[in-house]
Image (spheres, rainbow, N blue to C red):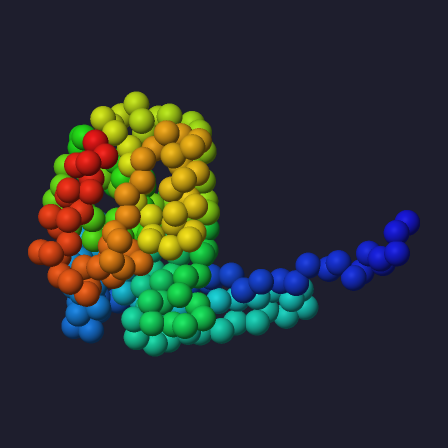
Length: 221
């Protein structure tokens, strides 16, 4: 049937992560992350490693194509099982994030012993937020457009006094915050001066951002 022939719809194979070679943090890595008030112990706690290189493969059926990417400022996000679920190249214009598999960032590190939970838009923002030592924990979905499932929200709301979201100060962030407010009755906060909290910390310092953020959170709880 139809006007299309079946062979026109052969899916194109995509590159998949083959291997990510971890290495110790360099001085350059430390300098990059410390701009956001994030130190090496925080990175290790959240499974972030510096990568020496990573390889990607594409299976064409008759042959396997393999590429190796090797440069500075590449980070692998690893889960507790040691699997890399995302690669972050902050200085890359095209491939900042390479998503390898689904993961709700920060979930494995929740202790449920803090009073508040903040849903943030990136692992980097979450780590930046944790560096302030507020009485809170965080989770970070893959992107602001990834709505958390109702059962996850319900479970989190039962374990914390209050759940808030802190998304980017842009259209996508504001839309996501409205959605969380409307569907889940979760209030949103955002930094007004910059796109996100890590950018604000980089520009104005942790000392300046911390009290401002503390007040924003306090108003909503």
